[in-house]
Length: 441
Image (cartoon, rainbow, N blue to C red):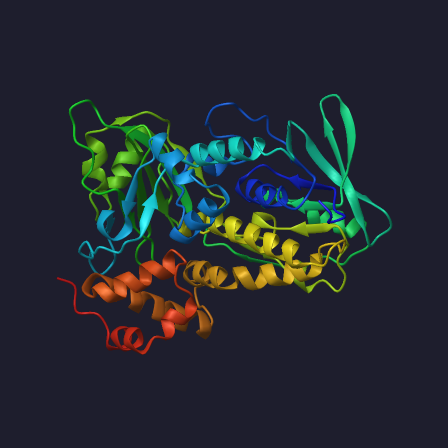
């Protein structure tokens, strides 16, 4: 290939790892993806991604980027039963100050289970000629040539240990990443870790529609939490196999439901139509709970030194409360950043890992604010004034949504990352928000 780069190793075959492997396959002669789990040949939740039992959302921008790197992905998912719908027409949003009327937005959304998307992407990645996926193999450390250069990984399975040489190691191992410990073994200082924990819990299950019964009139149902008054919420979507995937949220000391009876009883306490909807459906999964919702970012970009031949991305660096649906989209954006930096470097020059971590930190900064401003309101009984001001503005914005189609459209574009933070500085939007919403009907 003339680049002087031979082999890349990706730790983790989740969304971030698969997206990274896809772009590495265009830039490296060989790519090995190492995954601790044993991967199945059909879509199914796996132990290393316990959140796979819960509702996942792919934001509009994320769908565009995945389609760019996996042409025909949307059509393939649709053929597998994943519906495509317009966000403005198909979403039923039950907000604290009312529900917006349907508004055509020309914002196509596709909904599916996390296992289906991961399965389709994994098949695509494994079909790439440079890529090899090795599952059932746990990475235990980094191979180095001195403290300043990573040259591969050490791994083990049931039969023993293995060493895999690499010109670039990509840590995409997620929330359970051991990278801080591995860097400490190289003599690097511990990176600062910031956490925001709203102590939000989830409970999910999947339903099917009995023969002859119509599915819900909406494609997605959103009833968000809000500190300090709205302790219960819901996100439900229609997915493949004519199923409805429902996740119930609880915060502020409220516990998510445990059992079948508790699930329906909890749903009946919500303001939206979810209880009436699921009462007539057939549950086809157990109630699954999840509580690893802490937001956490590790400041690798602030380390004074960074070893050559190593980068980290995805949840290994910055992980969000899954309620905001940003993770899969950011995985795609970080892979695109990696692709851009690999293509722009000089021939035979290694990727500048420290520069990558700095650019990744900038890429995730606004998403971090969008997730942590509302979550800090749950975490802190007396939040600092910037948190109070940010929450006031976001609540005012959301309270205006039901009564102003333009604000609804702008907020949806922000949520789906097709508009950037500068959209919040639009004078027309600011005037509408500052004047305030009309009283709820």
